[in-house]
Image (tube, rainbow, N blue to C red):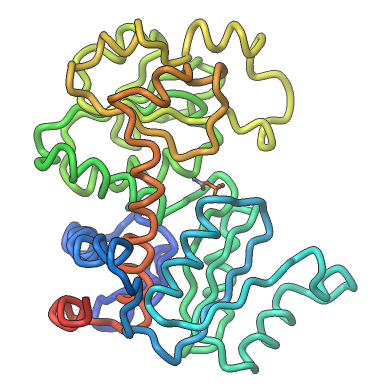
Length: 327
Ligand code: CP
């Protein structure tokens, strides 16, 4: 069985959401269309729909997070689910309880979904392989492997600005080697039919055999940015670097930081994206991060609709019509 097969039920519908790799275009389009239905819920007076009333969702974040954790919580609450946020530092794992024992105790409380962030690649798959059949697992980022809900909110943001994936040239710039976001974005863009995906980084921050991911590799940012429709900037993942990958942050910014001057090489209507957290002056100049081409805060807003879509599809296995009716 392939690693990604575990996330589909016998009818080919999502039972878990662990990785974008291997999913069919129909499923991705379904998620994007469903999120479109949820995008206005946050603008309503009562920011709630009753789709997951009576369901209990547990946020298990073993790594720090601002955007992902809070937007998962908001998304669950807007779907009327009950939400538990487990503080790992004050949980009984600090007294020696194993991860699986903790999960089995949460199962005994009749929870329905675990949203998991972990610094180990494969952690969400491992958990999905051990939970009771009624429990679904969502990967909120595992090591440098995958961050599938981030990948989906990124392509949702692109679709809102650019409409036709099959006409796009997309550049992903920065620490590709350690980035779970880059991997999930590359899978999503390839599945949705983007014909040209460029990755731009120093040799030390590109995975070996990167071309096998379906991308073109550039080491010169001035070449790589030429005529692209989308520029996705990435943070240097210092916490995943062991040893010296770069001379200095100043040198890195000069070669790979996005300045207003460099952005002029992209198409005039190019959008600038960043999954956050941003390190201003390291990978992106403030005037670009806050400038007219930036959609960085839109990405955060769209994270709620995308996570509502994925949670409702996984837990409710809802047909689109039911969601439309509820909104
Ligand atoms: N984009 C992202 O994963 O941000 P957080 O680490 O704040 O969740």
